[in-house]
Amino acid sequence: MRCPFCNSEDTQVKDSRPAEDGSSIRRRRICPDCGGRFTTFERVQLRELTVVKKSGRKVLFDREKLVRSFDIALRKRPIDRDRIERAVSGIIRRLESSGETEISSEDIGLQVLEALKGLDDVAFVRYASVYRDFTHIEDFSAAITQISAKIARDPGEDR
Image (cartoon, rainbow, N blue to C red; front, top):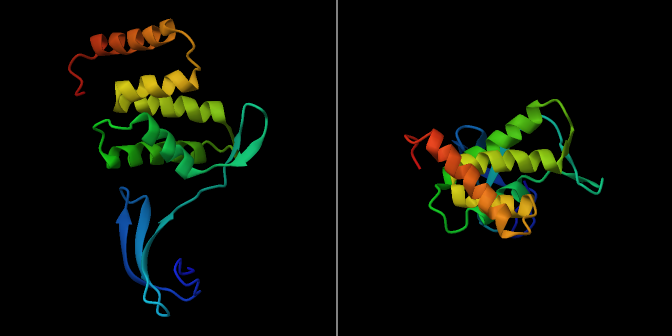
């Protein structure tokens, strides 16, 4: 692993431990040349995924972009970081185990919507407003009605 400080190619692992419910390994590293310390994460990647955009353009799947989508929807909401990481890891695990190497951006968006519905109602409406391209107040009203109906069906659910 190349040192991010001096670009030396010879860094040493000082500590390794599981992270994110065992789905990745966190490694503390040190550079013997400059003494810089940094952390890396190692994850299993079953297959390389390609995202097919609505325009037909294809791009490599980017985990960080998925995390940013959750972060934007959940901004200033009281959701634990571990729950977000578990939701992201779950989506990626489902995508990788689907057997497909090309995934439509629409499929990913639907999985994000489903995950947000279970995490936070406000984040769900925020994400849905962009994903479903809300243009009128009635669009928001319909999403809120959908959430209200879910709450009425599951009144004992912890929110």
